[in-house]
Length: 132
Image 1 (cartoon, rainbow, N blue to C red):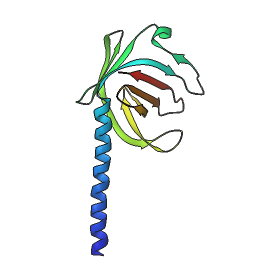
Image 2 (cartoon, rainbow, N blue to C red):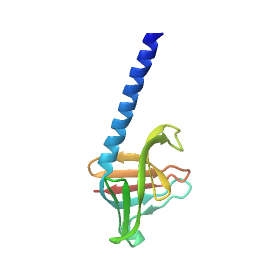
Image 3 (tube, helix red, strand yellow):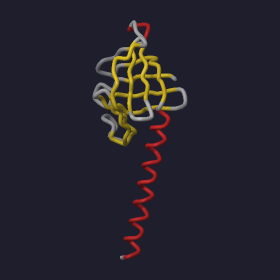
Image 4 (spheres, rainbow, N blue to C red):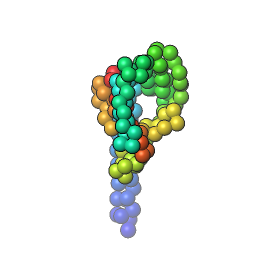
């Protein structure tokens, strides 16, 4: 019984450390200025919007201290907090990295040194693509 208890404690510690490391990696990689390239509507509302078709530029800045600042044509329009966590996707019911800001939750579909793609975690599933 003692071995099982010890195994459970060690397993829990490794699981918690892995979870924290994953969150730290994503949090660190999202911190930057992202410039909106385009948005694509979901199957129930198909559309494509770009800065050219919408008539404005948009950028979002994720800061180290958990803030997200949204700019429209280089004018700040929102300043709020963001949160990154693991969660379940609306369509596939699988675990994903989720980011919540400005009252909406998004699946982080892709993030690398130059690209960020987020998908609304709801039935609309609109996709927004940003570049650094």
